[in-house]
Length: 283
Image (cartoon, rainbow, N blue to C red; front, side, top):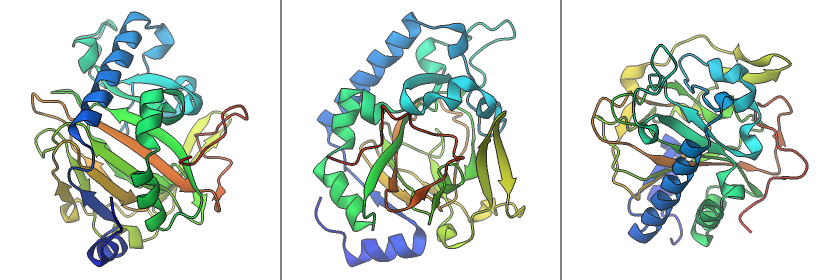
């Protein structure tokens, strides 16, 4: 991509997000989806009991789970609430049971490493003001048909805290995202307001420190309906939300979070990297 236009810069500063249609070409989309299918098939063939963690932003039980808390330096599957019946058996096909896989895909999977470290992305992140970009976290989010759950309204800075705030989310649509299948909703200009909570890692798991108990005004959120191949870039301070997927179509996305290495990454963030897998930039 070329340089950001004045309209881009104004929208980023005023609204906290940008939408780039057709950022990912069809060949790259096909490559990512093929690799996702291969990873899912591998998980299906080697499922262990501890790998059945349910990921839910409304219940937050995963936030006390070692399988989740130690996933910052590996690639692990997490299941959707509703994927298992009362007896603990899958009630949908395995490929439709996953909430996401993460969180170091950009470092440990060659396909996602290549996709995440392109000159276009490096150029974009630089123009958004990140002086020393470090690729922190990556996920494939599945939002499967019928059981894909709500993602509570939140800011990424809450969970990936730096001082000063620096995290940026890059959200790539792998399927068309619509209101029916659970597209992103954002709160324009919400990034200009103080963050309302902070998640901290403790000896017993994570706890959420409420900084402002005022609930988000959900009527102010706007849907971001996009076609497959679109990139949505947003500030880590921007509140965003997605509804359950009540449709019969999937809404897969790949999300990459980037922080600025010139800032201080909090020692009590849930995601901590071991010394043998340090954070890297785009090179």
